[in-house]
Image (tube, rainbow, N blue to C red; front, side):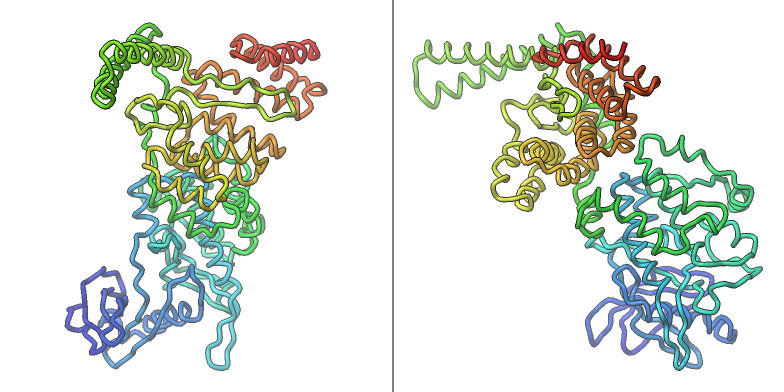
Length: 568
């Protein structure tokens, strides 16, 4: 189709956006309004086909009737003898597929927010009443939900697009031999040409939920034919194994959405949304999904390589001390020169002060490098254990891969402290104003304060999840376990402990001790005394805790010995 055929006196064509099997899409500017619009124009050679024309108009009519922030807006449909055109809103953003190509996957909390927003839009579609003249039809099935058809506005709002193969009203429960849409997201009954209900959209959302978080789909295949065969034969990945380390409560929702039999799935988006709502509240409180996604997309996250650089070095302690003393000696010399210049004090006084400073810094550095970041003593079961970060997270400051040691209190923790009196909203604003490398530690410091000082575990959980969205860090995850145990969310705590376990050898001795103490506490709270398997796990964890002998926790070491004797 030539560009000249798309011209309209109401629009200035800006550029060609794409061309599909049935239509060409342009970006245009509405001359009178001065706003950008998307023009979708049916190919000229299809104008003679009444079925093609009706299908094209149905897409416009469906979208025009569905007024919801998560559904693309249609403003107008224009038909002449030679042209059929849909005018839609222009979404200045990327599709979820484009984000997946860049990021490979999303953190679980962000995936929850995305799916929650799409479910809100699809709930509206599934329950909509559409009026066409005197005809009233109930409900719309999208039939082609996939990351390519979900755009994300600049404010973070996911938007469902392309209702080109949707079914409406009386057509909802139909059988067809013609398959329209993307095979990888199709329910098995639809691939077989059987009865289609709203649950086929639920299945597509289950596939998309899994893909957003894991970075790959649950049904593999090198081409469409292999994927189709794997869905029909139900060659699905081991969900328990592939989801290992993520929230098991979310897995149950994904599992039900992906049920092989339609009767075992959520029957529509509303049911799936109701199941996800309490989990969403747990992760994000009252924050709208758009705010969650925008916050994540604007602040970015650490790469795996950057995160590994933040972990304590596995080098001999003498070498670490030598490095620290060498660095601090240079720092001390610089400090000496600065003091001498500023105060004009005598050389003897400046030298004495510099030597004293070097001695103190060297002692502190030796302690932090040889045995990084001592944690406060873990508490007894039933109370909130204390913990502190490894060396790279010392004093609440997570360095952005440089390996520098934060001196005194970090800017992140100081910002969090100053903000407590002004309220959580102001505190979050100040944390976001910090350099990106310190924002994660700012959320971590706020989460600790919310739990231990304000006794607000709900808020603490929201903040610790925000910290973990930057990258997984075992120290932050230990705090999350503490919060989950405080709220008696033991299944979620089990999941988090499983995520931490592979990092155990990279953690400081005191944080290892905290891990084993929390593991023992998990078993005691689940009634280890009456459960042989739980008793054995508790004993093993307590023995590991006692073997590590965390400093400054003599009282808790005695309690651990008492608990161990009680299990014999």
